Length: 257
Image 1 (cartoon, rainbow, N blue to C red):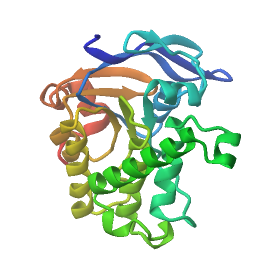
Image 2: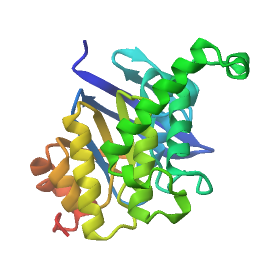
Image 3: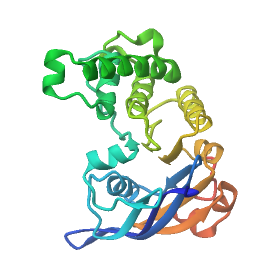
Image 4: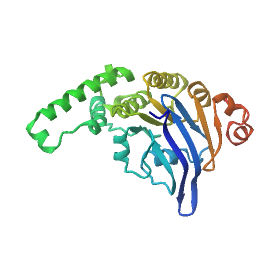
């Protein structure tokens, strides 16, 4: 078993001559929280898009538990055990909370068209598994009382919780959280922070992009700092907060601001 569950080596992405990510390398240890920070346009979301298969790397490698997953299709990478959320919450707002969670579970089902039509044993097993996972996830993310509510009626913070819940429905080994508290006030941010801590306590490996430095300093085991597509620092929160290059590029001399 590899201690480093997710590893990227010399990851590079070009867009018609523009270098969005250049020779970036880092690893995420099993059960840890690794934060990726940096100014807008630093290449953070591009890294997530490369890891999750939404983009193919120009060069470099991505490994999950020692297996090369570089350039695989998103659904293949999801099957391998990587789930993600997005800056803009990607939910079906005209469906209920339980319906969105059920869609997130589809990746783990084996029922085909005919199994569904004829309600075979496999279909019944998948349905029972889905219902059990939904109940478990609703309790975990704190939305049990909103199970039958339509997404459009949820608060922004509740929608953020649901988006995380949809990702959790596939039972991932690694979850990529792209600005999970974007647009939230401090009290709501604290709630999502506590949920992420709960995820870590449950054994999940987490990679997070965030701009709220107080939150990141409280959460992360290690931090990677990007600037103009290049890694300029990596270390513990304490080490990164004292790095002069980071202060000049991003933290502005006051990392808790």
